[in-house]
Image 1 (cartoon, rainbow, N blue to C red):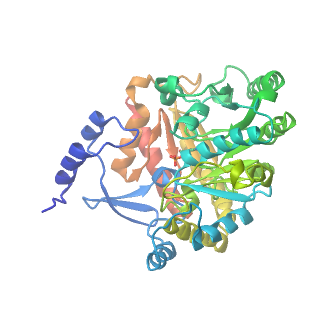
Image 2: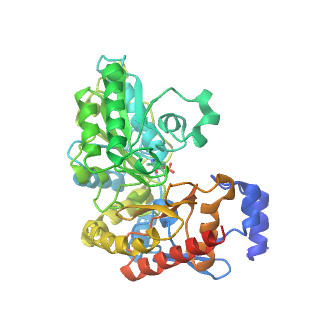
Image 3: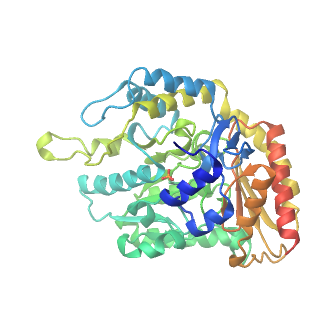
Length: 451
Ligand SMILES: Cc1ncc(COP(=O)(O)O)c(C=O)c1O
């Protein structure tokens, strides 16, 4: 007989389950939350305590949990079939979703290749770019350019272009050498914001001048470096760097895994600056946060380089067992329909302004160095000293402690070091945002007061 008490489940968790990005020896001491149900912007644990989902279950959730129409789309699809392969054949929702994705995406991308996670969508983008240049007679273009402190997922190519030392250094011998150019993180820069941007542009220019003709693609998190701690590009920077890349013949891969589907207040972050990527990776919010589905969208030019007679072996030799899964595609289709019907882009853009006002109080707290926001993506950088932006000693785990306090007060989120991340579901009302930011304020004030 299964034991569904908290203690019983925790015991099984400790015995059988290895949680990702989690130090298991600490996890069990933190009396972990075990979620049983969700509803709208909240999650309820096995003990009956309800929390706001303050990071949209890792930046995924769009329309809330147990959204009726999304649930029904899944039930309807289940009455037909859960899964059949997309290798050499097709299925209805995969075709229809591809059509919708192409319709709503930037004009430059016209073909959809599915996979299961953000990392695989990026992995595919990298392999496609590499193989593209070989097929069009430029095998010398085999390097990849990306930003320092960028994050693109945990598969090997995605890690190679990733720039966060903690996640990649141990695996160094497994990775290919990517070129990492500095990101304009003005808060961490010793100098003015303008100097920081100039330095980044100069670095990029010199890399493109020296090695541009060997670079296959520039992999970019448009506007927001998420995992680095919600670091924001200054206005105009994205369009400038993508133009520089294009002038050097370098393909632009927009990694919209975190920023896509209205998270930043536009359907895609590239739309803010009219950027037209050659390849675009999406995941997370694609299914409204319901199922693991991702996609890599590419230009016709790239797609066509893979065409030929079967004997020429020019096909893209990549695929996953669950590519184009019907349940994922069906719920994603409904997600896109709701997004349009509810005019979510306008809603998020509007509510972001209210959110900015709510965040003002947090920015004023003694131990908050900076609050960064783009749409519904917020990073609260904690600081021991606000004046000289001195961080807390890393070993004190201040961000982690703030999140534990948030949890006690009824809001779940995960820190990125000492940056407290706040990415509420996109349908959160202003009243809900206000309750959530009140919890964040109290937790930060309480946790840092004693220091
Ligand atoms: C920009 C970006 N790319 C890729 C990924 C990886 O996505 P996944 O965790 O679904 O593999 C993430 C995850 O946070 C991300 O933020």
